Length: 94
Image (cartoon, rainbow, N blue to C red; front, side):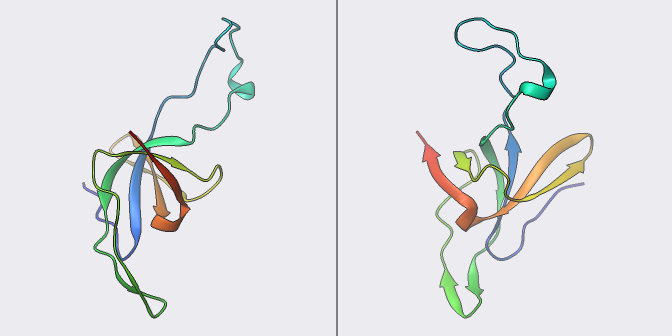
């Protein structure tokens, strides 16, 4: 099964959460932060959204930073994805 986003939606695959800090401290799973960096898997076509023209600026393969608790989490074929609006993407990581 594949996910095909509609309008200004973007399908993201979150990166793995850090299990250790830079200083080497191992974090318990409850202390790990939700990752905000993700890889773009699929992008909707854009178009008219709420009466405004939306042009999609991200493409599959981009690494992006999203708002911390944005989007809808879904599981497809055992893989977890997050579907967000393009406006919830804060930056592209280059």
